Length: 488
View 1 (tube, one colour):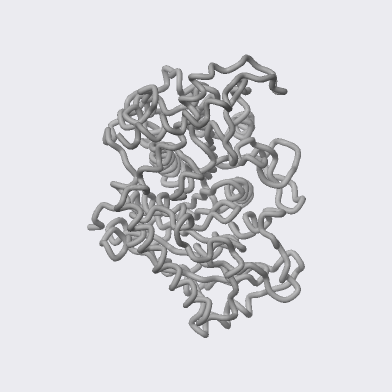
View 2 (cartoon, rainbow, N blue to C red):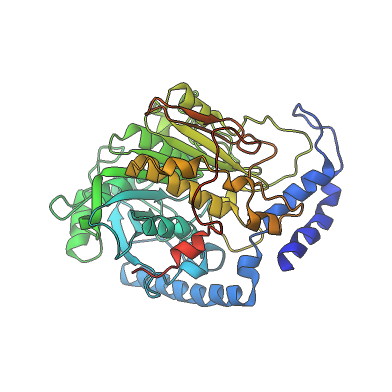
């Protein structure tokens, strides 16, 4: 009942905003009632953490991470992260509290890591894997978003992928979470503030990949900075002092010939660029959104995080589309405002369409009623999200990486599934009882099979296509069920 009541209460408060007025953008007026129903979907996630149990878990976890963070800063004063907005990892910065004790609860293995960025900043992260599984596994590096989106917000993806047989690195870009606010020496103010240029989400993604691929016989040493300075000595000294990780602690498990990247917001732009520039990478998943490598160069994505533009770090040119790259986005952006007129249905797909033109497998999936925060679990209603958008994201992220990193052609069935056009759990919380999770405003598309010579395309997943069919997966798919299953 609470899930049903919240959208209705929000709708009452929004009715004044939906009176049709003249808008600058071309297009037909939207139906106010339909838009109201669509707009209120972003309150569906709130009951997941506003229950008494959820609030208690957030409070308990918040106190623990607050104390841990202060202890880390006090015992390692060379680091400095207290200027970062989410340094405590508590409350709105906590992520999904149900995932916090993953190893303690027997769900898998996780190790905290510290390593030095190319500009001398100390970066903080975690590496995830399971005890069960093959002796070697593909690697995935996840880059977080900007505006204080710490790595905890993406543990849903890390744990789901670890259960699917990957070794996963999550990390905080410079100026986020427990990573240093500043660089070192002549590079002290490089990428400061991190959101101003986004360079840390590009350089940092490559540094994180370098670290994730390191091993004791070839320990991690950061590349030279943009000023030409090497901070390798700092990394080596801190390893000797026991204050940094010399190599990926799960290095024995990593198959270095199979690598994927995923990222959100500025991190999505970063992994799009790095993944198509770095020959070690096999596939990319960009959460809001895949940037357009064929567009005129600009830094990162647009202000709402969902309109694709060219991506280029620090004025460098963009690489050509090279590896299969999937974009996911949502109806509403960083700041949600109701639609008064119909938007361009292809305006979220510029990045994906560029990959199609280059003959590279791609897709763009747009979540109905969703926001920029579908892909980062922020436990506060101010950062709204749908209930099932995160599960759809987990499904397609895993299937995409299985297909193009693991090389499992059977995963194509999961990509070309009809399940998200008729999702019972989505319908149960939807104001209009609609179980189709794809946007009514923006077209969701898939363009697969360039590598096989047998193309399967669908330019409107909401309407459906002959290429789509039911899959054989569990009907009640849930990232939480997967992440918290026992690790046997």
